[in-house]
Picture (cartoon, helix red, strand yellow):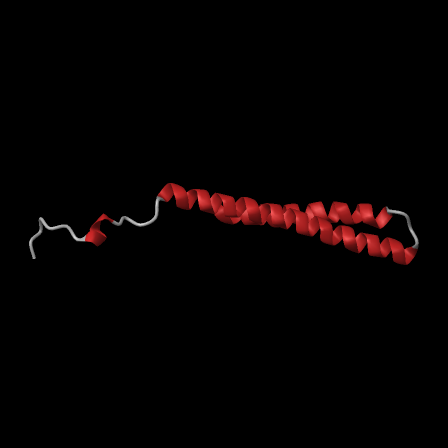
Length: 84
């Protein structure tokens, strides 16, 4: 085979590195946002149900918000720590 003849697959260097990096960054941002929102809403819901059950007015809902933010922050911290 003549070395001067290029094969079509030789020009294909794979995916653009900038596009892959952007895709990974966007995925991480989406994951962080989803984790924070889901954990906050989950613990808010649980706190609200405990308030209804005990007849309190918002105490456990506030505690649920704090736990949701703390839990979501912890998970996000661990995910970012894996990247480094």
